Image (cartoon, rainbow, N blue to C red; front, top):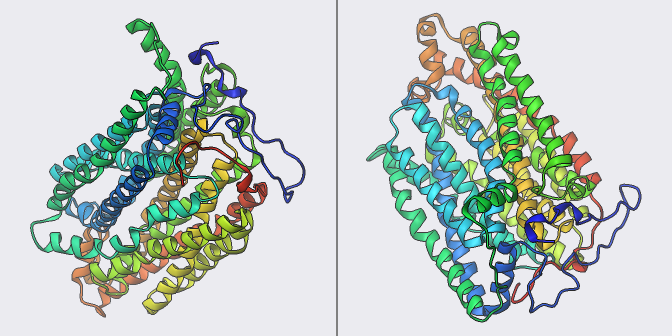
Length: 583
């Protein structure tokens, strides 16, 4: 049987052995019987290539690779923080401050879907090729963001930016999984995320400097140069070591003998083009009504909204049927998708990102308007999350390294701390509350997230062999993006439904004519003196909207508890996925 005719569904997931609390010790995956110095013959070309690289390269090359990964995450951390801090000012510049979360919804959905395509590029063509594609897309998005002059153009640029940068960081996660044992993966992922402990304090000053200086477009212009300059060396290192492995005859010889048309058909099958179109269109059509219903005269009863919802659901059902019964090559084995540990990992990822984007949206604006913090100080409060999550991800990695278990630490610390932080924030994110309480809430949430991010990824990968690492991570990221998109959608709907009504209720008579401007422009909100009737009215309206948003952010963790209970109690020290020189 040729590789292109191989049915991915032949790889079995671990068998369900009992109740939710059972203790399962999984032996090595499909590669367990393979020699450490020979690539897996059944794997896809991209997987074979990276196995050949890890077999042939030196420990020095591995160390240099992780240094380059750290530097890439450093620049990506600065970029993400700066973009998030500038977003309210970008939308306000176009008099569309209320669209702050909306411009991220479509890009988030597309970013989650395109990771499947990037996963297939990584598996079919190779890790360096997929990584390079992400660098190009991210750079194009930054150029578009620097040059945009209207909110529609910025939203289009956000699609390229999100696809490129999400794919870039996803590619690095795959590379870390390729070059580390499952037992040490939490520690290595925490190391990769550690630049956030530095970059989180740089986003505020950088944003403030550009806003008060040359303007926000120049901030994105700076990153147009930084991103390719820092990311391309890792591409060069990976490609150079691949060529080295090829010269050593570690890479299997390949000669397809296909014509151009046969290659086109082959790659359409390998990339599951039909499935990708169905899921991308289905998710987009399903989520768009949550942002468009307020713009329709009849709201949810509008024919457009109903059609979008119906077609979205139909396309998602068709996608499930296609993947189950008709797809010659699926993204990931169907038997793996029905494994309860995988289902739990995907649900927990969606829960985490749903909750995060609920409490995170408008948080910077809230801190500036209600707590009267400067943009820099507001960014410091927000950046407690990445710092705390990195610290606890290291601790979670250490615990998993010594215990070889990831379920217990998530149940005892990850989920409870997340619920506690969100629940307390529901009470303290109101006018006249000290900002110190918000800092406390951020600490609880960040500590919980640090544990969950590491343990959730290990849970997903514990059920997959090396051949499916890329698509497993893409699936996990997809559910995270969908959860985040739904969170942004819910937040936007609550904000657009509550904030203007409360402004109309609380604003003094002399400020009523400026209601639309106040609603849509953060700069206008900040222009009213602290303690003035208008500023107090704006603060009360913020508090009312935030209360409803944070209820959703807290309540969704009921699903998170169920997700962790679905996990098997896997012992990761018994699983072998990688080959050659790895950590």
